[in-house]
Image 1 (cartoon, rainbow, N blue to C red):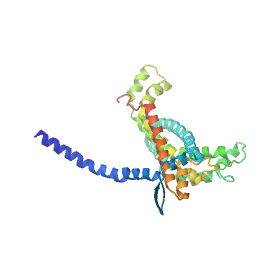
Image 2 (cartoon, one colour):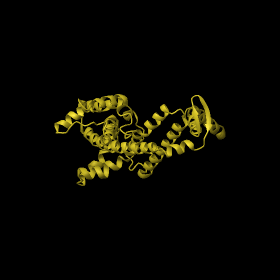
Image 3 (cartoon, helix red, strand yellow):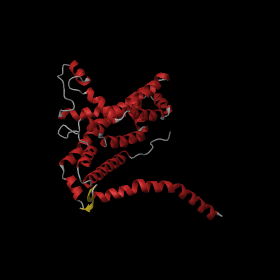
Image 4 (spheres, one colour):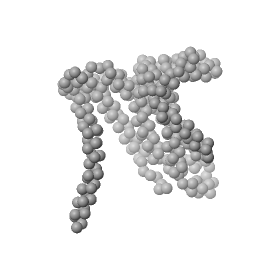
Length: 295
């Protein structure tokens, strides 16, 4: 009787898992395996694949533009992610103290940039950075600065693109931070008050440790999102000036659009996938996600 029920339970479990496994195989595993195969070939839309071994990988590795694109993506992520997390954390603490309808209005307002596409944000900020009539140069002029070609000068172009990226992700990051803050029991802060702990002490020993899992999630997803960013640099600068804003995905996209042979673009995409996965694993290893305190 026990064995019969056991087999019945297993059959039910397998039948429920089957649609997921079939979908995973069709839409993930088979395309991924086929992409790996094509990365070892010279293949065009009008030519059958010809096996070339590691040639595509070697060409990418020895292409200075590929390594520069990876480095540009890392710099862009370092511009965006720390600023976004710090600003979101501070603003989430402000939001936590707000009450009533005004709190709801602010939460709704800061979420608006999240639903705006990267293309639309790019167009908005191209106007803001306009050399002659842009808002950025108007504000700089109030401080006595000469007009700046924000998107055409090497030292300004990447930071200028980082600002709309911070703006786009600020709302959702803040709301996730706020959810984490509201999940912390007030009893911890009350106990700290009895011990005479100050604001900084409570933040350092209570808030930050209990926000560890939220921080890990935002770090990994934010890192992946920013390193994969390409719409902003594509629309705002086209990867220039002098390839200074050409991110890894934009490098892959431009090669895909312009190269006759697709194998090299696929090899570049797989190499970028390895870079993303490796750095995400390092972040997981360093922060070692474990729930610090059971709430």
